[in-house]
Length: 335
Length: 302
Image (cartoon, rainbow over all chains, first blue to last red; front, side, top):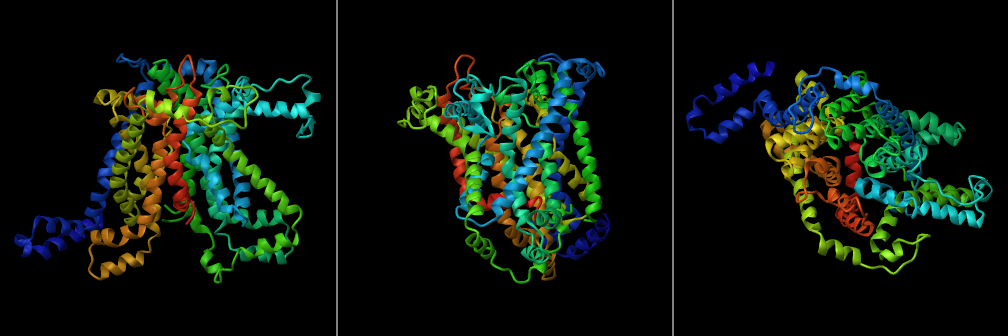
């Protein structure tokens, strides 16, 4: 704030004699020439809005988690009772565990296939642009719509997957080396959303489908900054494709890959839509995530205090991400 | 903040002569035309199918007569019909919902850009201790899980008396879009060479004039990418809109879920509505694909 004490006097003394003749607009203009003033004038409106619209709701959420508020009642302070109640309930542990499985599995799938896809798209081939546009599609299309599309494809009776499987069964085509007819004496397709393990698989699949474009496109942009000379040098040294990837590509795009992965981790962690549309947490709560549990407790059952408490259980993990950021950003540079 | 991308060896230094990168793959493809090309073709087709098929399947559903949709096994060919679209538009105030979405997107974007761009510039231009702290807070705001603030927002909107009006979702989207736009635009502002600004200052331009006449025109393209990205996110948003809007103020995605009633699921209409919702955003998104990618990657790549 050194600049305030320095530049304010200069600005005023320059304009002292002319002050009377200066128009109002001109005075504002001169005032804005002061760095400190300009900085705060630019920042304050947005900061006010952010405090009012994010910090206040968040604090309100923390407060509510400490009360027994229901919809329409004022609610009174109950201390940590909501948290204790959650910690005693089975569904909470199930949701927490599901969140961990869902987030890690989906992020790993997105990371691995996103990388692979980025490398594939980085090659020049006919229809490359077209393929890139297709890859972007799941990102652009509303999640509600794509969620419903998957729901229709997973539908117990009309599932296009199951009918394709059945067709393959009839044709005696083998999948992954297993002949369907030998493994299924009669044909019954899997209930994609009806059995706990498969339902979990399905929501992870849909989340990965939706999140892959972000990985692929971002990593592709990273790949395009890798100087081709390095690969030529690798050729001279006789490296194979994997060695090139491991020793040239990966170290160079690691900074980008890390940022994308962390970002995707956070978004996946708080995902709500995929589960809400596909399973609503079922069957038997086997796909409930912390976010959907919080929604169900808070909005559907009207138990606002408990819902807020369930949502707050998401923060320890986000806190780890924040700590990581502090560490990572500090190490990254002085900027 | 310093973007990790900076720690690269500078590509422009390592690559004084930019060679045509198309040459190498084509040549190798000609040499080994057999296996690798076939494998790659199959891969590309698989990738294409994986990403496009769900969308394709829903689009065909919207053109299928119910007699074609509800059959076992599913039909691959059918006589297309516009019946679902007709039904959707005539029996249902679908365009009201469409308009709601449009109003909410415009309103939220207007406020977010108007306030977020100055904030981003200040954070990029003035490296004080305070601005660094603010940057860090904003980065963390981007991670706020919607589920953690949905109930408080619901109560706040009820208290303000704007529940079930379009103001409610607009307010929430500003709260989430503003940090987003600020964060990405801060990166773009930082990439404007400081020399340009200093040259202008030496020439006697004021701080504010530098921002308005020099820096802003330079980042205008980036701003449009960022805004587009934010527009897509808001247009597609479902969670808050579901909680905060009412029958007449549903945004389009929520309205679509309204066709999912306790008794029947109007699949044909859902599909038709979904296609109508996605159409503008997909067309715009694919036309300005390049810009979309710029916006998408700028947080990580410089």
